[in-house]
Amino acid sequence: MVLQKIKRIEGDVYSLAEMYYTLLAGVNNISLTPREVQLVAFTAVRGNISYANIRKEFCDKYGTTNPSINNIISKLKKTGLLIKDGGKIKVAPQIVLNFEDGIVLEIRLLRR
Image (cartoon, rainbow, N blue to C red):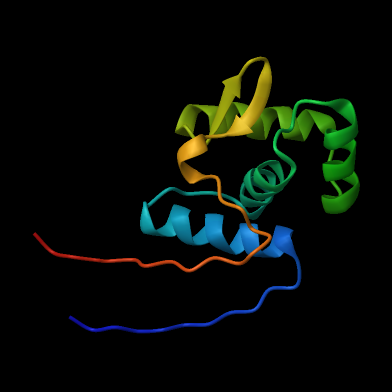
């Protein structure tokens, strides 16, 4: 087995979360657009994407619109990345991390 170490430094928690969800989607063969990755990452960092002020913050940060967010949420709910929990749209708990401290990933790619 080969061990390869890669170190990457990101500018903020949103960038770190985007990198994580890009890798997660790639390893699991889930096709996501950059905007979909941004929405998952932003939602994970903020805790939910349900309230108008949080949606506005996302729109301002990424230059998009509320109807676009609704379309993306619909797709991401079908993939299981986003869930509705107590009336709030959140990232599935199995894939939410604390991005404040950085993360260490171990990915094993094995053949049968």
